[in-house]
Length: 311
Image (cartoon, rainbow, N blue to C red; front, side):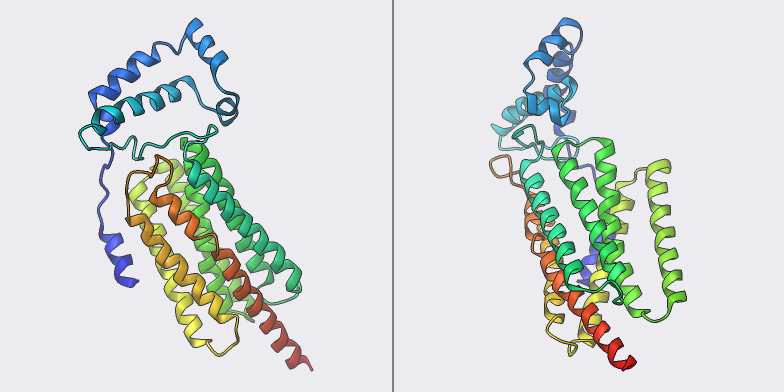
C-alpha cells in the first residue's frame, strides 16, 4: 500500500484527452454553435427534452455532446476511442451525463444516510467520539450528494464542490483517527481539529483562488488517503483484541484500498455507460455499513469502560 502511494505521488500529470483537439470535433462544434443563436436557439429550446432542461444542458453543451459522438464514430472505425476534455465519451441517459456513476453515488449516499441513522440510534450522545463520527458521516453524506450532482452534469462549479467534498471526507476520517488517539485530552483534540480546519481551508483557498491544480489536488488526496489507511490498519492491529467490531473496520479499510485500484483500469465505458470510475463507486457502497459497525462498537466499548471506571 505504501509503495502504491509513493508511486502515485511520483507520477507526473499528463494531458490525456485529444478528441476535443481534432479537426473533426472542432469543425463540427463550430458549425453547430451557429445554431445556438436567434430563432435557431429558440427552436432548439422548444425541442429540448424536459429532463435535459431540468439537469441544465445548454445549447453549446449539446453541441459538444453531439459532436463528440461524431468524432467517436470517425476514429472508432480506426479502433481508437478518443477522450474529450479529460473524459471518456458517455451516453446520456435521462439527461444524466454519467448515469452509472450517478447511480453508484446515489447508492453510496443511501448507505451513508443509513450509517448515520443506525449510529445515532445505537450510541448514546455522551459517548466518546459520538460527535466525531456524526461529523464524519455528515461529510460523507455531503460528498456523495455532490458526487451525484457532478456526475449528472460536469461544470467547473460542480467539479470543484465534488473534489473539495471528497477530500473533506478523507481528512475527516484521518481527523477521527487522531482524535481517537487523543481521547481524554480535550486541549490536544482542539489543537488537532484546528490544524485540520487550517489545512483544509488552505487547500480550498489555493484551489479556488490561486490555481485549480489537478496534480496538486490528486497528490493531496492520495497522500491523505494513504496515510489514513495505514494509520487505521496500525490502530486495528494494536487493538485487535478489543472485540468483534475491529474486523468490520479492517475489512472497510481493505475494501477502500483495493477498490481504488479500479481507477487504474482506465478503459472506454462498457456500452458507453459503465467505466472504471463507476465501478470504483459501486465497490465502495458496502463501506459505510462496515464502518458503522466499527465506529458504533468502538464508541460503545469506550462508554462501557468509562462507566466501569465511575463505578
